[in-house]
Length: 123
Image 1 (cartoon, rainbow, N blue to C red):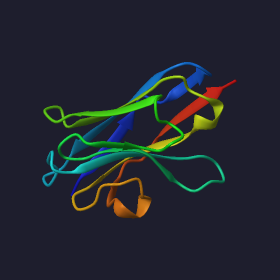
Image 2: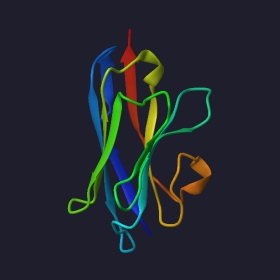
Image 3: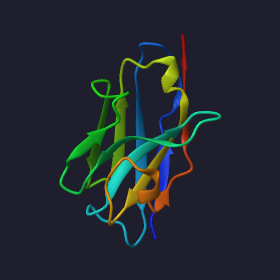
Image 4: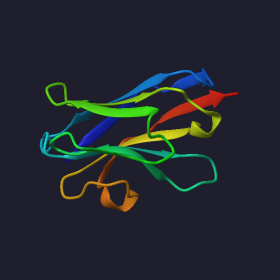
C-alpha cells in the first residue's frame, strides 16, 4: 500500500505562484513509482497536469507547459509541483497520484491517490 498526503494549496492572485508537495509513505513505496499531479475543477472531470517517471522523465499537459514544473526528492519521498504564472482557470482541487506499472497523464492509469489540496486563483 502507498499513502499520499498533499499540502501547499491556497489562494493566490493571477500571476502568482504556489508550490505543492506530496509526501509518500507505505511499505511498498519506492522511487520506482511513477508520480503525478492531477486536478479537478467543479463540474469537470479530473485531468492530468504533470507526471514524472522513475528516472526523472516528465510530461505536462499543454495548458501548463512552461508554467508548471514537476520534481521529486527520492530521499524525502516527496513530490513537488511548482506553479508559476497562475491563471484563474488553474483553480481546482489538485491530487497527487502514484502507480508502479504505468506512467502518463491518464487518470485511469493510477492506482494510489491522495485526498487533494485546493488551489484558488483570483483575477
